[in-house]
Length: 145
Image 1 (cartoon, rainbow, N blue to C red):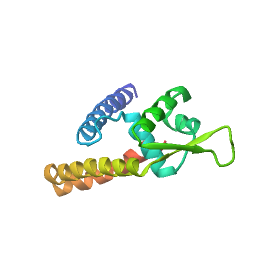
Image 2 (cartoon, rainbow, N blue to C red):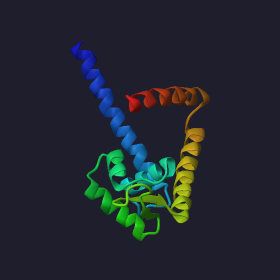
Image 3 (cartoon, rainbow, N blue to C red):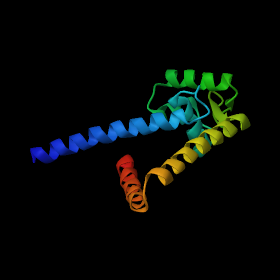
């Protein structure tokens, strides 16, 4: 049993390292190099889920509201997000992507996906691509657990 646990720990360590390397490579392929990973993630949340409060975004990103305020402030200064009064609670504001923010996010996604698709096609043979597709389903299960 101890051998299995050690193997699982080794697998977890190796997977974490490889995912980190892949994420750094994807960021390097992105034209929005000046944005932090948190800023990019917030842009993704706003794109997928629509306008959100600072508190909701902080919960989603597992950061303190004060940190999220700084992230949103930087995005607002760059014209990536805009604020508006909360529709039902006048004490709060909601943040949304601006058209420029959405355009930038689309550009980032396209650059990353293009690089990754080219790498998959150029490096992996058909059997390895099938294995990768199977691994994606497993990784989704891990992420959702």
